[in-house]
Image (cartoon, rainbow, N blue to C red; front, side):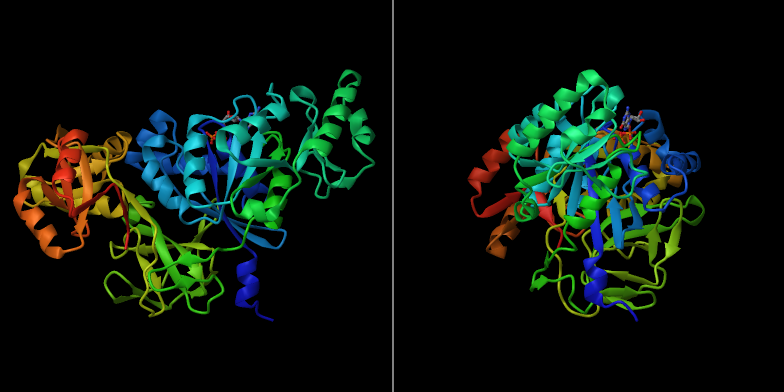
Length: 522
Ligand code: GDP
């Protein structure tokens, strides 16, 4: 019998892994996919990355700097559930891309290096999750190496993140002697990840003989203390974002990964409600709705295609169906939606709320776009951050101005840069949140469009979206400040200021004008 929508939705778990670079996100992703059977051999994720890199010029930057610039999605099944991992780029320069990805998940796994504790990037990503009340499961990685004391790590999480910790497992042994997880509430143990089920035992004392003699008593004392003193797990507090269940393991040596997958299945929520302008959309609502949170171009350089990554918010997407694009009101045929597995893409015949599909298109879809089966609604909350660096693009070959304009428009639609067209007709200004985005833009303009460019300082360094309750006030401001006004990709006006001081000055002089640093797509 065909699966009902409610059943299909309840099996979905869509999450991101957040971590400071080097904490082990890639290794953990590989292992999750490995246990999920999505790949045969761990290492294939990286191998695949390398293959793409050698074929694509602009990814040279990624290779040179050893960072991951590409956001993607990976799907696997395990224990009856369907997991969608949304990869978040690790480098802080890509903040806005990462934030948008986090609007599309229902939970996050926070990977912490057991020797380093909370690092700056972890903290920043955590703050975004908190803003959106995303429940977090904590994985303390690299227990096979010299690590900090587990109690100390838990204290640090509680203090730095103001997040209650509920350790579900406790490490058996440390560094060289690390050999498994002890389930505190159940009194059961799992050795490495080849062991599918945890085995009941009669307390910590019963497993102490897995450790060298001189470590046994410490293990027993510590584990008994953890059982007695640590907070019990409270799922409600977890779902509200106040408490995190904690696991200890080693992604590299295959410890704790199965604990983590089980936790994602048991604790992490199925697809959440999403806020649209006209109503709250429930995942189990019959009709399909989705929003685009990411655009990626030239994934296959032979086919200049563009993939829009859409998170399905409700209902069921079926290949061949028509969808209404809210921004234009036009119909769009979903003839070739795709799923992404570790090593391949596959046509998606059916996808359910919670799933992420790639929709190939030639520029019809933009970040923040809403798709429905006809209903007029628009999802709120895919943010656009005001750029912190503004530059004019200087073209080495003036004959190619038109081509540059087209290329910049495409890059902007993809979210690589933001593009602002000044009201006074002067050349376009590009805005980025982090400097690395400029390098990516330069490489791609050269590599994909044959346009060598450099960047000139703009007269401006701050940019704010402007609006007013009375349209006349806005019109007047735009007229008076014409030389400092530009339009973004959607035609919305922005005010460009020389620096924070002049921004404040103008804001005080024009109280009727609202100036905001974050624009929510609508
Ligand atoms: P990412 O930057 O967060 O994606 O981190 P990677 O997964 O690339 O890991 C960074 C480094 O740490 C690599 O050299 C991994 O082999 C290593 N690593 C990852 N997990 C573990 C672990 O559990 N134990 C040890 N000893 N090394 C690990």
